[in-house]
Image 1 (cartoon, rainbow, N blue to C red):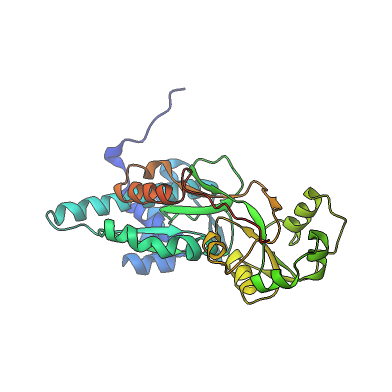
Image 2 (tube, one colour; image 1 turned 90 degrees about the horizontal axis):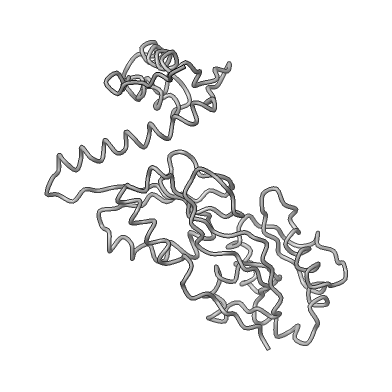
Length: 316
């Protein structure tokens, strides 16, 4: 049976706008207020769209609206399409004036604060027509639909998104230089037993996962990993260690400046590579967007393969 395609001449633009508003506000009441139309008219638009494509877009629960898988697939396409129309019309209307484009960018907190934020001014100076709206959630997983570009911390995964490896995580033992000096001469197993271990919480992994993997790799005798503090981010863990106490297992590339300046030291050469890394992810349809392409190229240039990696030397 021949598949009948929807003719663009009959695309229900009002219904698509209504669907997008309901999905973003999570309710018909909020969407109706935002679009300045009645709730009944809004509901009719959404129902007409569902009838046109023959699938349900929302699961209507007693006190909530939840997007169905079909709705989740449709929402980012609609949002990006309307965004592009909006930007194109603004550029035409303001021909001759610089068009201001806002990119919504997501980054993990430690990556954002320690790596990207200090040099974002360089991107803005070179591309003053692009504004950055930066969000740094603590949770993990794929970026939400309203994000243009995202940096995610993960292992390699296969998705529909374009994924560029910025750098592979390379974990090493770090501590305050005074602590390293006081504990000088101890073997690694004794050093770890005699000091407080600092943990970084990673979703779906035990809090002591990286420490136990390092000990197993180094063929050290078993030890108690349950002790010590747990932090949500590597940045908080490093800040605690910088205060003078505790031993952390962190990405040497992420804290290369602290190591180079001597604020942190790597007292032992043992390292751990668990396959995690920082990946730049972009929707394939967004690669033709000039602003997104500029920002993506800038991130890859500054953080991608080919830059000088940290060559940390353990403290004598």
